[in-house]
Length: 254
Image (tube, rainbow, N blue to C red):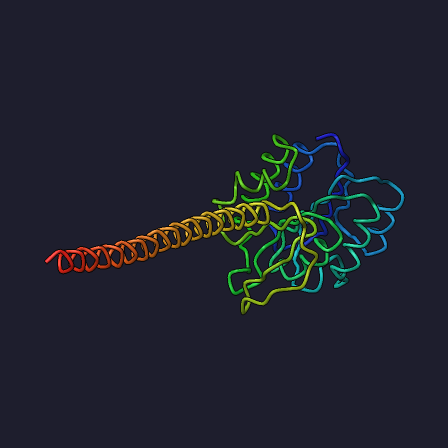
């Protein structure tokens, strides 16, 4: 990948494998602008304002549906990070942080693709599982240059991760609630649905045409039958009159 990446990795003593994932992201996705260790919200905003544009961002931290944890108990709302990333030109973000899915709508509604960890009970991702997914996703992204394609290659590794295309609606796994978003017209799901609907429409049209042809055929046959009945009726009357006339002629001859 040629676009510059912003890597946000605040220090957390419990994320014992974060440094290895951090290094793998740098190795695979260069050039990378690094925010590491003690990080404040101001640091993130300044990095995006002063060092952009950025093609994407990668976050290694803790999170929930509302915020990303930074340093010294400071947090940054997903809404603020999404606005800053969009202003910095980012088109995707990886939120390798527990229960980050709930904030995905903040990014997708601004046209940013998102990989996040599910919001439900399974969203407490273990350090090793996060490390494994982070390394393999970074490698796949370096190979493909597309976050959606890269995620499809590695999604089977851990089904607690989710991908949302920028502009799409987001469904959380907590109670099945649908967060309102802007539906992107050209998502794969939309294209498939439209194709299916078009197939149904054509099938209905064919059935309608077939019914119309059948009804027309029945009407024609009915008209022919009616005509035959009428014609036979006239022939019967004519034959009866002819017989009466012959009988009358025979009587006159006698």
